[in-house]
Length: 599
Image 1: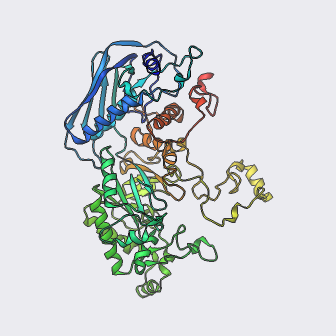
Image 2 (image 1 turned 60 degrees about the vertical axis):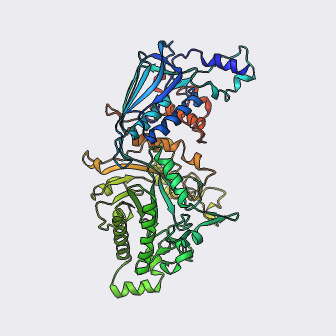
Image 3 (image 1 turned 30 degrees about the vertical axis):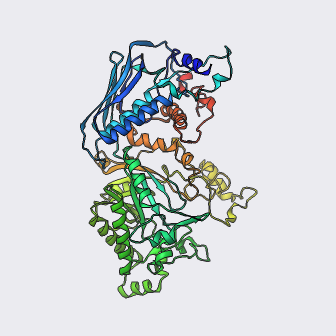
């Protein structure tokens, strides 16, 4: 009974069916004709291993996903015109079949679906553009289920998860003819994942930090043997085979994997194996005064590579040489963030060296980074660093080093002459807003709001600033340094070229949202990342402005993002909810302000 019911309902007519694409293509033309897929629909393309894998993957996805939009369109329902023909295949044409996946690779594509033709076409300069076009095509395909109420209802109508053997029967593409011309606004579109604070059984891969060194290296096996976590008798490490599997999996989907081994700071985990090369290891990150100015590290887990020892650079070279050989990408991230000079000064040998040579902590940082960058350069890789050495320390870092900005405006590094990756903690840090994670924090011991002194209260009222003054536990940070929580809306409106001239925008190579893992592991990964990371993805692919120069808005993106979240669930990704399900079936009724369309 279930099978026959499903067959009938899937063939029911669609009325004004919406299409919600994510990310939004640069240019798209719609028609009003519904085109059904043929029962033997297939995807055809040239004999390229990556493409063959993708064609199999998307053929399977389209047949099983059977997408019915969750978000209701606010457009008038119109009976669609039905094409007399069926779409029997999607043919892929690739111009440059040998193009490698690197920074700047052409990812453009053109997709044409016509109700007058049984064959759709996807044309791309490279296989990597074809992958992007296949994702867009998969989002065009829908299946319509019977939503009628009160007529012959039984329990079968509430379960349609067993329809996977229907193949392409009942699938269609609404609003044809469709012509899409698309390409990314930025070539570098990334996600940074920290696997050192907590372990992910698995992107810019922040592999190690002060808390753990989980990467097994042949040249220095002691680092992981002694520096990796152990949980329930198991060593939490990534082997070379693990890395190869991750890199291969990513490559087949057009994703580059850029490794980061942070240094000279954030290296306390190295001390388990090479304590002689690490200063201030195992110290509490603050001194007894709890003064931030007297800290040894930016967070719990102190330790920095000693910049005055020859053996330090021998060890650093071993690590960098092996990691760069293991990861095929042309870029390598050398870290370089949050150095704390007091950690170096904790070692008598370093203090003596500084006095003898009349150098400062800044000079020591410069010495280390010069040698690290030379080692990276000798591997043939393009070096990346966090912004600190340029925007905070004002060191003469070579201009061929890509600078990743996280704390200052992008323009500060750009105006200094550097190519930049944007990762502002004010917009694109996914871990923010979850509260303080340190222990014995007595700042939370408040049962009532602290009293604001009268002069301050009067000043706040005079300048209407009361809403901008919230104590930590009463609408404030809650002890979280980068609060508030970055909503998808906040992430979506980030303009990474803000304040730059047209010429200066050429220095912005792209961006990355970042998930630091002090309070995240495999159990929370999907919900921390998705669907918020998709907001970053659209900003970097589609850009902040449409083809007519209009700023893209949250209002336009909301229904597409709402629907995309449910599509992620359908694809097995446990993305966090954005709104009550009711909002999707009541367009604009969940808007923050009275909808303009209702006036």
